[in-house]
Length: 158
Image 1: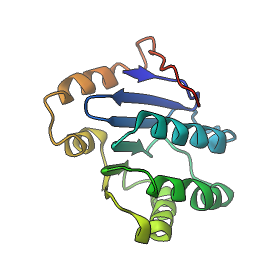
Image 2: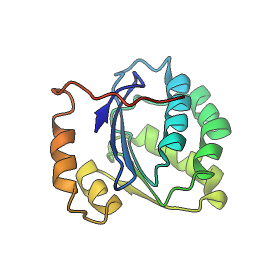
Image 3: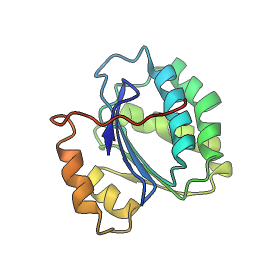
């Protein structure tokens, strides 16, 4: 299911696989990053996500203040989740954000209880994340049409 209950993100959730795919869609507008990231964390907890894919390729360069906030507030919550797998999709051309992510990862690495991987593309990331599930072609087709279809909305209490 595709939904956009958090304005800065396009989200795809598959309940049987407990997988959530996240894409930044606010272009260069980062003024709501912290609000949206907090809402995303609440949603991840509410849905009891076990497999999380965060596509960093559309995220503008993270400023130092946002990097600090993510490290101080968001990352500690992330590593406390009952995740099994986390994938960060980031192209090699995204050097600034790759360095920022590496620093955030190093900050919380001792507390990480799940498998985390980097991929340069979301198709292979989803394949790994879902163990090549038979549901993957349907999810990929839905994702490919995410900007054309009217998004479904998930009723949330966050």
